[in-house]
Length: 603
Image (cartoon, rainbow, N blue to C red):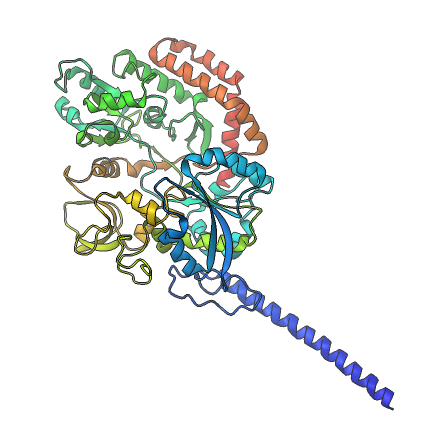
């Protein structure tokens, strides 16, 4: 009887154990379900709710709010790049503030900006790199893909899906951003800056003082532009120095900006650069030297050059020589930023052109770069907590935290200024009158006043010493530009999202040097912008190898023969022979690479 009771008791205990296991499994599944539901919710764009959720002892990531990132302090290592005037990371406001807010304590490996190119190949070859790298434009797209394929850079797709709620919102908002960051194998190995901007085009500035002297209007077609340049030539000694040194069209041809002015007018959307040498025609991408429009471009440029309307030295000038000519006031049109190439105050003489067309009545197109640039954040195979790294960087795909990464703390926010009270870092939001003499480029102020970010306090006192530039201040106390530009979102976007107005310029030449070209660009060209070939592009290994072996030789030949056609050293009736020459060098194969990549990119 006793033996029977013992057996019965043992059976009851075994059944109880199974029941307990069953209940434990159910609880775990319920917890996972709740956690996934939290991940799918749109996160708040602020950091006020900082209490971590109780997701269980084994949950490292805080999934109930954006901050802190982890439920307990985590130590991780990171590489950052410094400039010569940078403070050590531990002394910088940015790292102090975000360690306090995120629970992530970064251990730093630093390298000077000037030494990074030399240090990088050794570091990557030996595996002596930290778990995370935070450096803008540290690696080319080919390097990113190569290191990703070999496993040095981790694919981030799954981590983004699980932990990067803010980035997913940005991807929904700007679908091309996800396409730009995605490699041909479907993986994302580097996170880049997303910068929706009204800028994104090259420079094209006409001397409006000269134009007024000719009595002509701003040109809107290539024929009208030709007439303006002829009239510029006829003005003679405009700067009154007694020397016949004026040039209607000045600058350097190799940069691509001069090509773009004409090619865009002919209907090709391109920045004019031979690398990548891509142009959009309609909804398809091509290698522009192969297109019929390239011959029209050469014919037009040859006419201008032959008649002395383009600087005869345009193919040999150095940047310093262009500056010297610009400072003498001798350039009528330049595909350059005037304030860098003119004497003080000379920039005021230039106005951004209205994008031209080949025929009157056509709708202009004007190249605009895609929004994604500066691959900045890399998670390596040495990273112990990739999910923490991705969750941490995801913070800065919000307006508030991208603003703080770019410009530091709000001077009037006690929490943001904690430990830095009385210092001169930071910014303030100040009100300005919204009068009729203000030109808006971004932002909708509304009402009688608007708010804008300022490096002065509410009384107008400068927040930094007079002998310290804003860049020096940033390098010493905030986040050095060598590590990240305006971080993961562009400034125009986060200004607007934070309720601030950006680039409000007084409609007067007494404004800043930015006023003239930015305001006239906004007035004359911004409405004609068309997004061009991707700014970031990842080719397959086979395509990359072909490009490495062939593209330099191909483009060198195009550049050399282009100069001959424009200067008249080679007659234009040899253009068909030129096409056969570049086909022999692989132009058709490269055209296919550009075309097919863009088709996949659109998908």
